[in-house]
Amino acid sequence: MFQLLLVIIYLAFISLGLPDSLLGSAWPTMYQEFSVPVSYAGGLSMIIAAGTIISSLQSDRLTKSFGTGKVTAASVLMTAAALFGFSVSHSYAALCLWAIPYGLGAGSVDASLNNYVALHYASRHMSWLHCMWGVGASLGPYIMGFALSGGQGWNMGYRYIAILQIVLTAILIFSLPLWKKQGTDDTGETDEVAKTKPLSLREIIYIPGAKEILITFFCYCALEQTTGLWASSYLVLRWGLSAETAAGFASLFYIGITAGRALSGFLTIKLNDTQMIRLGQGLILFGLVLLFLPFGSTSALLGLILVGLGCAPIYPSVIHSTPAHFGADKSQAMIGVQMASAYVGTCLMPPVFGLIANHISISLYPVFLLVILVLMVVMHEKMLPKVSA
Image 1 (tube, rainbow, N blue to C red):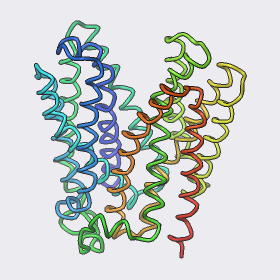
Image 2 (image 1 turned 45 degrees about the horizontal axis):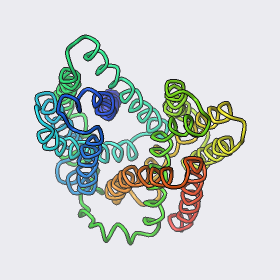
Image 3 (image 1 turned 90 degrees about the vertical axis):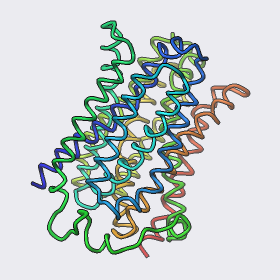
Image 4 (image 1 turned 30 degrees about the vertical axis):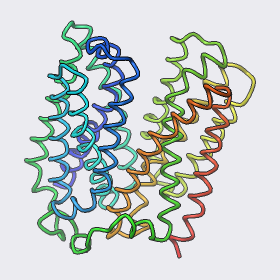
């Protein structure tokens, strides 16, 4: 039964990734239909991100009240409803309204599922589960492309994903008894965790090591998102590649993350979470050094692949180490705030580099990433003595 639940969680992580890349793949068609500027995609993205941050901060309270299984099922259902709402929208204002449950659903299920896996499964499963997220994020554009190339329109692309999410919701509802393992209460949480009261944001911040791990997570997601968003532009403007070639090269960064997480699952058998994080940081540093070298597109290509491979183990290892570092009773609260910090980094830092590229030079791309990496390493190393004391 425990292994059946793991299979369901793997499906849930694929489902988490499916909607994440839909807006980007559908927007070139959508903005023309709605007669809005192409930049309006940023508004939808910000609404989704804001909802995700809010629900991540509430994940501790929700999970302790209802249990991981119910929170996951309700969140996926909310996401399915939002995706269906997108598919029937005929105005940009309607998209903005549906973006609210879109974001709220994503944050709760992400934080709640990550905490459950961190508490109950080995580190290798955390890496492989996040690899499954990459599979879902890769499948989303293909499903949208199938709808667009078949003349069905972007609406059907969203509707296909909504149907898949509804099917998963049904599976999650039928699986609710599986979440109640021996030694858990009627919400499926361990007795120790269930009896603790939800922590306020102020209480979480003052936990030893909390500030450092939040900055670490902020830096990681800022680095990942900035690398992915600006890779193509850097290759075009710095090394003179064509837009088509640069896009293909930039995609290797994400392939590196997905393949790296598949590989990380095996490495965790020999290495602990801290060692995996340090390994990832070292690979990112090596990749950035290659981006600095004046050898043109070849070194830049290898650099992006290495940065992707380096990013692979960091996110799942930080999440998986949270119960060990901060205690099982505080892990849900910590992971919820970590997720919120991650989304802030994702939203804030790529536009900051955009301003730097616009007003100074896009050649500062590897410098900007290096500064973020150094801060990440310093904060993570500063945290470790505080949580092991």
